[in-house]
Length: 366
Image 1 (spheres, rainbow, N blue to C red):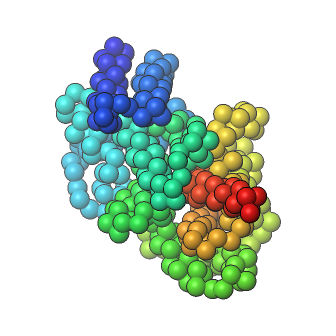
Image 2: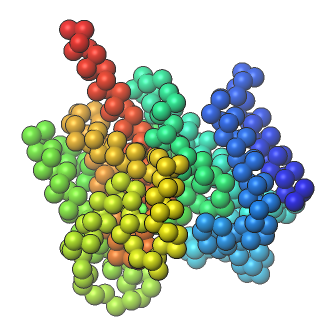
Image 3: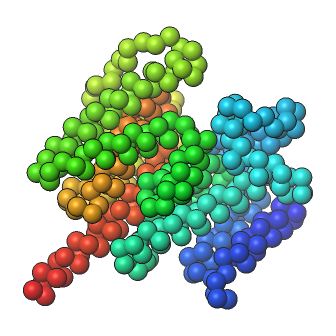
């Protein structure tokens, strides 16, 4: 325990030094690093080595990669290694273990770094619209859910950073990096991002009077395409004979889609798929407000046509619809999978809300 705690403090100190600017540290980053340090130490103190089974078995999978696959099989730069063994996050941790660091702690540290990068990406994006960051902005794109995820040895914040880079960055190099990172960590998400981008390019050329029809019909087409692509992907990846998708259009799937949009998809899953009680999950939403406030705010903004934001809004929404079409054919679906979209949704919601407020003020002055 003392060694683990000292390593956590050392890593937090190194990140603090790196983030220092003009001898001052951003208040959010300072609070984030402090919380992360206390949280990861507490988790280890409470669970010990069993911390890898806390919340998600993804952490245990990463432990196996670090302690079994890489030591026994070595590093292999093929599809199974680059994607299956998630080298983008496991290799840095594996090399860190050679320097004496705890591998699981180091993966948690990389997730903290990605959250800092998400925060800074968001600030840059808002600056493009001359928006000064406010406290309520944080709840929409790097709030409680993202902070919690930074204390776990998973890949979600890395995926969130890369997906958001592709969706919102203007620099083509950063967008390429974002797409490549998404491909390595969640290939079907990368496909959804590209499809969403292509559809947004087409729909943005339509006249504004067709805006709502394009949103509705585009959503149906993207969902259907994603659902059928799941079976195509299963054939290519696992050699499963292609079969016509069944039960694509039914009340359950569309109810689940609506629940996804407001972060309540657990209400549509069976007890076998959701191990926690419904009451505990609902109460958790009182802490993780961003899981439903962010998508709701985005939906409101999406329904108000704005020429400068339409293409970005459509790209995020169509990517999300295609992605949902894919994952809806599986039994598993959680808020974690939506994190890449929640970040972009939150930032676009901030811009839309701010612009609406400014328009009302201008009208009042006039």
